[in-house]
Length: 638
Image 1 (cartoon, rainbow, N blue to C red):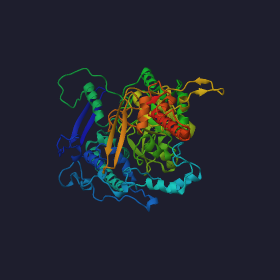
Image 2 (tube, rainbow, N blue to C red):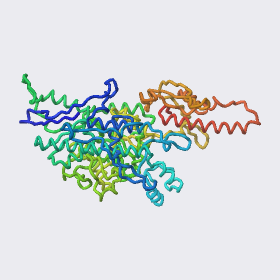
Image 3 (tube, rainbow, N blue to C red):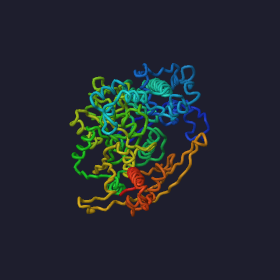
Image 4 (cartoon, rainbow, N blue to C red):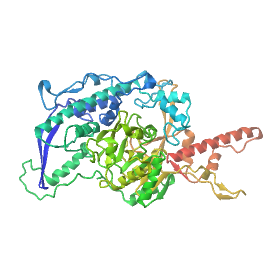
């Protein structure tokens, strides 16, 4: 369960890491389970994971639990003051370092019975019986929407993300209703708040006790619980440590770094009989940018494979490229960054990031919904210039580089919250990254460029991944796939020296280009498939015999947007038989007129000319629509 060590460096040569406390707990479920019964252990981290499983059906979605907890205390005025009720009985109590009456105890009554993820409450279904998103809510309200309409602004502050800037009362009411929390979401807020409060109470007491017992003045936190940035912020600010260090990889991935350090330096606290030559100790923490570094050749190769769907500009000058990014962000655009070696650990720290303007509150829902395909309650983090951070956040240690790895949550200063609503959570908190020119010079230069343009010394930063369950992108090919998968919601991908935008389908090229004298300048383009494919048709049965659906789907591994694995096993669902037939015809040797001829009987009679003309017009429209869609999903190009 929990462990405590004291560590000491001597003469820059040796390190001693000595255990002073360990607590062991029983593993209560069979180890054959995929997570070895982790949720049923009585450790602080395991109990938090049990809440994660109860709410989200995933023991490893603890970050979502942490993001859900601050909604406790928020009132949705548009629904008569709806708010979550606190769970009175603690889930975790007592002292982790004692046994008996004052020792640690767990009470999982709040996580018994039907898990929240499995509930089928009536308000989770629309009038047609379709299931709604379980936890898709935010703090959008009528007043904000009316103010946006009155000023002619979309509620999202994002071009193209709303059909019209001015909304009717009916549209406002519909949107308000769709963005209120469901009953199960309210209950999930209660549970998240309870487990988060208990975790903070128990761990704060635990660390304070061993600070006093050991007399140590510095704190290093590791383990999965060290990803809880809210707890980390309190440990850093409230317990009087001179320095607090949380590595960028505190979870299981960081074990690799610990093994490496032990192999290099050993541990003088252990009985070691063999004396060996050792290098000098690391003088500073390892960079979080420890992943593979793509070459320019790697990036060009990935770009070339997706060239029919990309517009690429090579910009070698760093400042000019950063100016382009800053202007795009200032105009409410969303930009993906792929630069240098990837980050080790779960946080995107400016090398594999999606960036946006922290001033635009509407971008929170837009990025959650359109870019990341996730719940709208989830907050976003800022990457802030370290030298400016204390002016915007309650850090507790002015002038320090408080959170270089996005490990701490702090309160946004009340006077600043209205200026950066997209990175201010519902309770006024923010999980920030502080950026220095020494640690990451190019990222610092980018934020400085945005600061000079807007007066805001930070950008909204979230991890660069857009596919469901996709980890942070690693390779250039991953980056381009994720960029294309956003379907235009990410306006720009900056990969090394390459500024990349999505290319729109050139529909006019399908018809060819002619002069006024009807002389053909360019012949009609002939669509071609992106690669070999497998196509299959299946029948999905509903609850009754009449409730059946015929589905045609295609798997094309060479297309840039192909994703391996997942529930669909890499298959992409086609609209209908016509789209499937057109895909078969896209062999690079047929133009649109040739495709039309496959469906039109040329031997018509005068009586049917009008009907034939209507049919051909409708057919032409449907073919163009489907060819455009096949292009947008990178199945064909021309």
